[in-house]
Amino acid sequence: MLHQHMKKAITDNPKKLANLIDLVNLPSTVREFVGQSQISRLGCFKCVWSYIKTNNLQDSNNKNLVNCDEKLKSIMLGKPQIDLAELPALIKMHFPKEPK
Amino acid sequence: MGKIPPSFRSAIGNPNLRNPSSLFRLETPSPSKPSKKPRPQKPPKQAPPPPLFKSPNLEDAKSLFDSIAAATSSDPRLPNSLLHSYAAPPLLLPRPLHLPHPPLPLLPLPLPLPLPLPHPPNPKPHALRRPPPDAATADIAVRALCSASRLDHAVELLQELASKHCPPDTYTFNHLVKHLCKSRSLSSVYAFIDEMRDKFAVKPDLVTYTILIDNVCNSKNLREATRLVSVLHREGFKPDCFLYNTIMKGYCALSRGGEAVEVYNKMKEEGVEPDLVTYNTLIFGLSKSGRVAEARKLLRVMAEKGYFPDEVTYTSLMNGMCRKGDALAALALLGEMEAKGCRPNECTYNTLLHGLCKARLLEKAMEFYGVIREGGMMLDMASYATFVRALCRDGRVAEAYEVFDYAVDSKSLTDVAAYSTLESTLKWLRKAKEQGLALSTQIADLPQEHGVCFLLSAIKDVKVSCKA
Image (cartoon, rainbow over all chains, first blue to last red; front, side, top):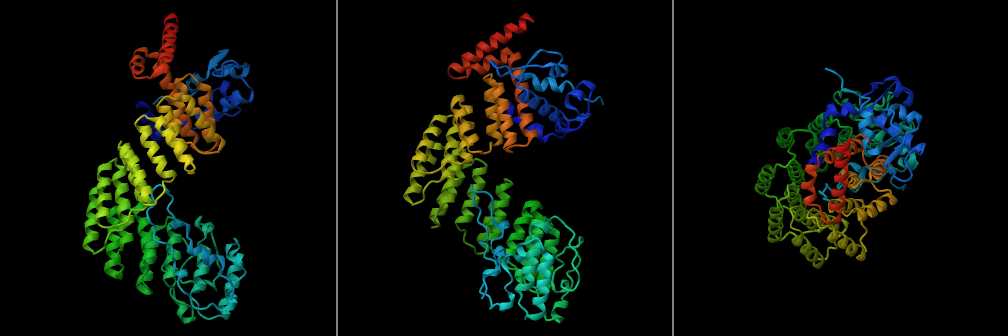
């Protein structure tokens, strides 16, 4: 039930929406990964997720895990392996809230 | 005699008139446009090569029109068909159309639509033995303006034409009212209707009232709907099947199945024969307010009356069953439906997917997701969100990602909607795992072995976090 609220809230809330789709200047590590100097959080997620798919980085035994290659590791806090469930949170770390 | 050029035909079947909702068909004024009226004979010269007006090349049409206009008598259809061509979709993006002057004045309307609509360039036409604009002209122009969302212009134009030439017919009027209802306040719509009645003696008819009632029902203002019904009685109209359906739909949308049944009974008292839409509405309403058993009975009643339940009927009923958490009954109904030769549609599958996820029958849900994928069907927001959540909860995050991909690729949802759902679900999952306590209450109402699995994985997580 809680979920129903959340799902509505995000697309209706302009601030949260902006947070998701506004272009942001990237720190150098991420810039190298995506090959652009600016990207939105959503764009970054799609970029990383398609990178994982095209390079076949999902663990063959457990698809929920991703074995990072060097390039991916550089933007995932240097972790050798990540869980898909934590991917959005890890990406969010590169998009800090702007101080008011 | 040449056949009717396609441009005339499309004036008949104007797509704007179609109502997209198949679940509840609000009656649309039957689009019998003026073009259907028996026409005077066409001068033979007038039959241009059929594809002409449909081609984007309006210059051709115009020059042909010129030559015809020069030679032929005053047939009011001629300017109208040219007008209709201009009004065809490409123009709706205000593409600058510069028409050289000669042919223009004979268009009674400023149709190339210079932006601020000036007064329609006034009937020089008469002087040039040009036909005056008639109801068909008004209809085409008003529809074009409506679909370009230029309602102020449409209103202005309609009133101008009504005062100078002829009153609009009811189809045009109702079409405009329908569009006004969508974007204007109710009071301004009433003001428009009053003005039309006072100045031009255009009276609202039953269809107008149905449009108004539908509109107030959609905004959940049933008191106003009741008032409108009494006004309608006072004006001497007898509600027809469409009107009753509309009122019922209003009650159903608010999950007030009881009142919907009352409307149905009243309808029978008044001797109005219910149709398929009535039954579908009623079954939908009853299902929505949790009275599935009654809805189920209606299925038999309608069959007795000779209406065969269609996919909408079955889907509503399945929806009701799923709401009650009885997804297995919904599955059984699917079997019954297919046995009767009724093909389930996208909405049916979405309903089932949603219901099965809620009832925690994930394997079955996967099966239906497979069917949806195979058929290239769309996922709706509710079933997508529930499905993703069910998968995540079951620890199948990779599959949830795959569903995310499908939702985006099939254009079922915008990537923003799909991603924010996925993200918030994963966040919720993490929180749920962190709060082992909150979990145990959830597990209490988890049925079957899923609860145990969940409990185990939760315990494991707690252990891990203790170690850390």
